Length: 151
Image 1 (cartoon, rainbow, N blue to C red):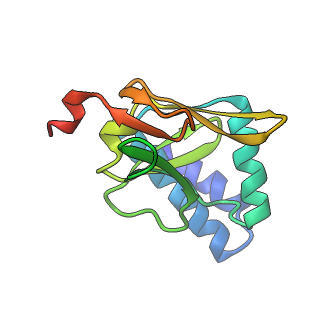
Image 2: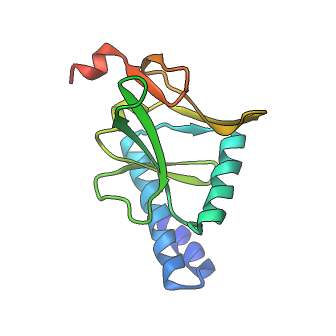
């Protein structure tokens, strides 16, 4: 099955960069099955990710979802496009969007749902995390459940 997908996908690539992007997406697909990583994107979030990809000329790069120390609470979310995911990253695909997560962030983001909303004050990504004990009013920072911080 992978050989057929690889053949069909590579026949669509127009350049070396296209081939590399397809290989990265296949790697994310395969490692996503092996890691049982689950991150969901709402249709609005998928649309915004695709818009940002076009704007930043990162058409094939996986979306990097990372947790960093700091923010209004204990941890905050960091989103970016990753041209070269690390060999230890865990990956999944949601509605055609390849997602890469580093192993340190994995316990904090598995099960995460990312939404995108706009209002009169602007737009932004919203995070719904089953592993958050509480979140800051900004919506980008959270305190993890105690069982996650014990590790």
